[in-house]
Amino acid sequence: MMGKSKNSAHTDDSKTKISTIIGENTVFDGDIKSPDAIRIDGILNGNCTCQRQLIIGPTGQLTGNISAESTIISGKVNGDVSVRGKMELMSTGKLTGNITARSLVIDEDAFFDGKCTMTASANNSDAAKKPAETPKNTASDAKDKK
Image (cartoon, rainbow, N blue to C red; front, side, top):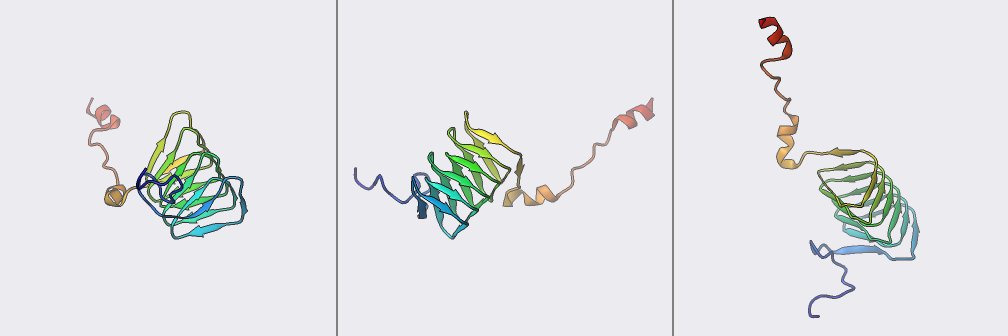
């Protein structure tokens, strides 16, 4: 096949360059930080911070907290996930921890045990800060009119 390599270091959907790969059967103990995307197919025992996308493959396991632009989880994560963009939990994914994200997709058969906090997008930040208007007619108003 021309142009597509099975071992390409790019994700299929966004062509983001993956600069760090923790391969299957590899165990890494400690925190990891990267300005580029990270893919984990092995085991990471520590926190993971990346400025781009974090991909946890089907064989990947992470015990620690995640901070990234976006995340795709197909493996197991035991820790809190904080993403500025989209968080995807695939059908083979298992997440035990809390999520903070602007956008969330959870596939059927995925496992999630925790709570989720949705953040406002940059376009909706003014709307999120504006207090909700109170209704003009409340139940006590209707009672007073009787």
